[in-house]
Length: 292
Image (spheres, rainbow, N blue to C red):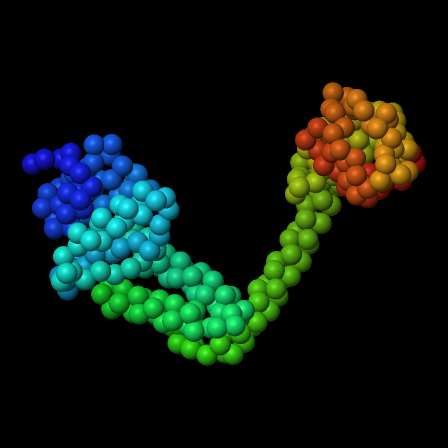
């Protein structure tokens, strides 16, 4: 049994299941068992499968990357016997649930393009082909098409698709607003806990400040302690620099540090010190509390 062969032979041996494994001299194109790959196990071109009825088919990827991988895909396709059942999926290795998620995203892309198209026939045809692929897959695998996907595939009118896209966008916007509100509420809860000394660190993209009377220091939510006088000096220096935000005094900002931390960026709404990003309103809040 010869294992190192040319591209055409790799594809032929795999397609006809004539041996367990084979590869090209550089191992860029190879198969092992039922699976045939291009440039590693991360890209599965196709695989032989058998369903619960004992019927055989080939799951074949619809993805493509480099020119060389496209050639490997072409070698594989041309080697498949004419009578073979070929079923197209995005990833032959995926479970039915994973394939349905991928197909739903593909429908999203088609819907978006179709809603804007002056000539929708191209995308309606693409939707029809995808419908055929999914039906062929589910029939062979013995699984049901999720109702939400089935309804979307059955729409064949541009006006209905535009309506569906608009409705989906409205639902998405409402969900995003709901999630943002919940996140904002949870952020406030955690910030309050930090300020009330119920937790010692918190970060959501920004750092927060609190005053510890016992140590007479400002503490950050990234667990840095700053002496009051050092914080006060920095506050007034930055305040001076920000009198003209469009032209901050570079001489003031250059080589500006607090403790061993470099002041890297000063903007109207925030400053960056070391790994801290602190909103101006948070700085003003603590400054007001301490009468800076």
